Image (cartoon, rainbow over all chains, first blue to last red):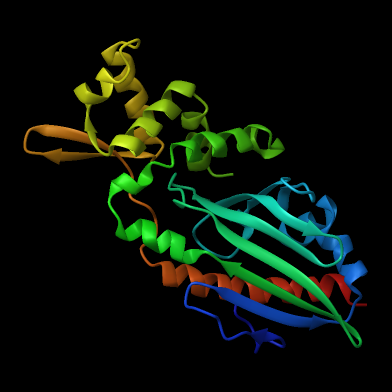
Length: 163
Length: 105
């Protein structure tokens, strides 16, 4: 996660303070970009995903340990919607290395829109307000019992789980 | 993967420990005796052992109130949700740059 020089794309005016929306024109066809997004190999190269099943309900596991952040995190989720060369939407939940788990899912949507000379790639990461809501409430909101179990079940089938 | 994450996986790999977590998620903070009462089929020392493992994995913490010790699921990391939003803004802009590098000739 580095800042670097001025971003050649856009950080879109967010609809709200709990949504990240960025877009960028890329000189490649949606089909070419889908070879990255729509394959496990592609997502390993781009996102460093340990597991990516590009189908509805498929699993996602990501180890952000390699990033420059001092804090190491694991991200996991599921494919919520997928349409070849057009859109993928996935849930996104973070587990910190000290064992703390985001109390709810956020959501990441990547959409591809053909434009002259290439593709407009838009990425929207939403749902942070769910985390905020949890934070401000008492423990009674934590009756997401299924979360831990479901989360575990997901990890059970991950190749990286025993690593 | 870090040692701590490994610890977390290991702690969560046990069905009883997941049930203990679920129980605390449902009921809020509990004392060891109350917790043990929810698991009549398990001995109290065994429950305590599970609780200790969960604590060492960072999934539970102990709060002392007077002479009583309460076990609770750790409060969530969200010191500042806004900070996460900003972090992801940087992360995703960087990622789109990398995507461009991957696919543009």
